Length: 190
Image (cartoon, rainbow, N blue to C red; front, top):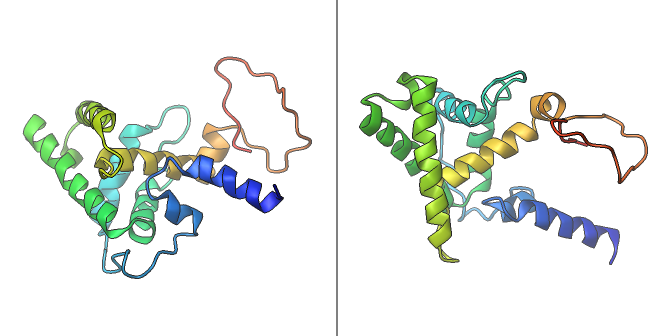
């Protein structure tokens, strides 16, 4: 196996579990008939996605997802990398999440407390876990699965996520396959 083949296989292993991974691996270049180019997200949509992401990865002793600009990242990835079917699921999911919040708390997601937001996302997380247990191979992804995956990908590949939430060394020295690790240490970004 040559180096290029090895790198491709590792990319498939790492990216293969993310929805739309085939587009990530091809540099987000899909045929024109698979991507909706007219998809536009408003600043209010980005703010909404930032709040969803911030509820998933809140600010603690490190900056949260909103500080990393995950809402903007999500819109770019959905617009440029998701096929039309997954774009539709994601957009409908944004509405469904807000509808659930209205049904549960009589307010939109943007107008409830952080604790209420968390409670709504816990309900959705349990729903998507149940959906994924019973999902058949050709069934579409659950919208909250998409949101969580994009939040994690956007956060941990951002400068904030890689340098403040993870341990980062711009130029790692040598490879050491047996680095000491103590419970509670940050994972390595490099």
